[in-house]
Image (cartoon, rainbow, N blue to C red; front, side):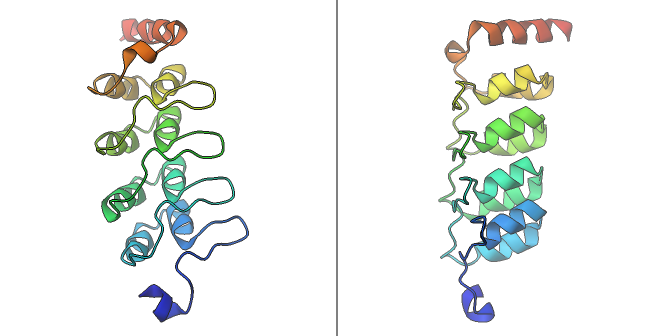
Length: 165
């Protein structure tokens, strides 16, 4: 569809490895992302040179509408994709404390709340370390969170913050 109209390959990338969908996600252009996703040839999990997917860009740039479009536009999306630093989109949402972004990710059927990065930190760790209490509560309320995988320092930190509330 778009390839024929514009004469451009839908998954063509720039020197950084960013596809048109990466650019739309980075810029927060949910309408462009929605249009691109209509072409079934598009790779919603395309990775750039830094192993970022369009979803990583949407979350890191705090573009919640783009995230929603990406999640609704493809059943093949990998919500647990990790970048070169081994961060998944939920790690980013937890680190920056974007509750709405995290909630959008949390309702996805394939989300792994216990995913760990190269430092063995989960999204729960980042929410705790950064003091994002609302996000911390949302993560702890999930039935899929595995408290047994939390180290004692993080558990202590969580308890100190929750006592303040």
